[in-house]
Image 1 (cartoon, rainbow, N blue to C red):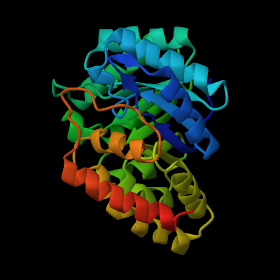
Image 2 (cartoon, rainbow, N blue to C red):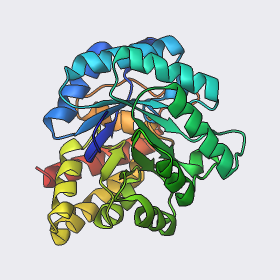
Image 3 (spheres, rainbow, N blue to C red):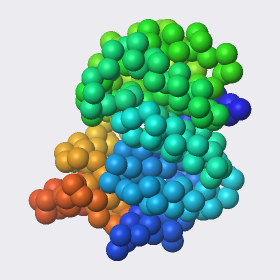
Length: 298
């Protein structure tokens, strides 16, 4: 069983070219983030455009990620399916491919009760024999998994399957409640760049971050500084990186992120429909802010 996770896990972009997974670009990206300190890889998921890919593309993306990784760090498969049968089927494909864990988002489109969310995850755990990372992102799914539901899942996790949780709730009060209930029992990892400093300072064990594709060393260094209590140095990095982050998330992820990746020589292609390439004005602003940050952060 996978051990408790910690540090920066990169929520990988999925490089696509002419409708096919670009294995060469994925290999280059995987090497880049690992060489710059990332502790683990999360393939597919939201940043990996899971919902815009066919099943065949999803499997291929995982294959090339695992091959490029060469066993260096854990590989997590992010499953963003809305229904239980699809999630279980994909989870077992992931197991056959050799991933180390799956990250499963709360069921969406239908608005489930907390009991429904609990039962959903229990069925995933029963039917997929892999370590599990819970994933709460209510502003995308319309469903909010409350801290008491997470606590209840852990209370009944006899096999120790739940190794972490990616929390993207923008309500810091809820995040603090979650940390107070479960931070000593499983790894809470933030998925919110803008709350990274606060959450890690309060006990989160790291982050699963989209912009770690672009700035893996910055996020790794920031995590280490906070853990070491160097909050002054950490806060300076946060303040410097914020203008760029605001641009990267000004339009739906990973559109602007993929454009910024091209600026550092990591061409992951364009975002997949229904997402569009970012506006020319945003691209121009991105380039200015990225050059400014990289000139400062060497």
